[in-house]
Image: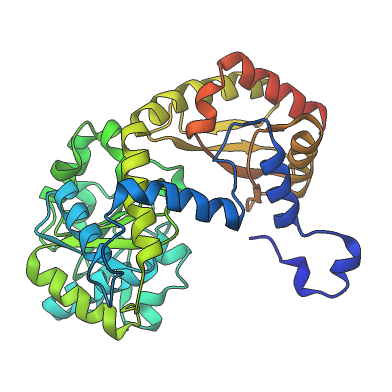
Length: 381
């Protein structure tokens, strides 16, 4: 994560922060390969106002403590996933904690099965342990979901098996449908899907959202990842699970007075993005193949996985992150081409990784365009 240089008075003399420079550069780009063009607050408000007219009846009163438009969103998500009910949460971190806590309480077991690369382990400050008193166990450390053999041979008990679909840190990787069903069938404990990016996983798995969700006892989905919402998440499950989840939502401070901006943007995102996801996932394969071919001249460069399982994948290059960030910013500022987002260093010195998200702006990029963009970036290194 970039350090906010504006926290340092001396940085004001040095110039804008990396975040500010990247924001300005991407907004000024004529073409973006990864992600979408960032909006300022005025633009974000205008877009929400325009989209909200189709997303919900704006003549109705605002929500109060989870009713109104928030309840409408819950009902829509439950219908999309074929679930009995859904509970809206202000953050996915809160939703994940609540799901694991419910299963732990029901089964009288404080262990929860996670992957060491999973979001609760890597990006939530292990809140399940600090706040919930839970302990993680790892049926596998391989960069994939556990196999049926690993489930059956695992020597520790646990309350719930959490599967992240796709597993982001491993490269947004997904199992096949047969692998997923085999793992779930081998499991005696409840199964929870960390489906922050479940929306785009249907194409690789070859099954609908309700069919995928039906494999699990509870499912978490995000509204800002992929869908471009302001914030928020949802948990789905049977009615008793959701009723309990809402009680814990209140205890964790998630029963906000009003959340209509997040709910409206989520409804708008469902309308806007779900119909386009197949085109994103399909074109990601074109983009990844073109990147792999263009970067073949760089020893150690890699695109992973190839082909991508969703519309997101990793690119690895043998340069420090700061060097790649600077080259990318220069390319955007001088040529109007936004090729990649931010880079992060790996455990191996001199090797960095970035995540590519193929969305609307990338659809206009041909394989030749990708090659030309890579050549321009390499010329700056």
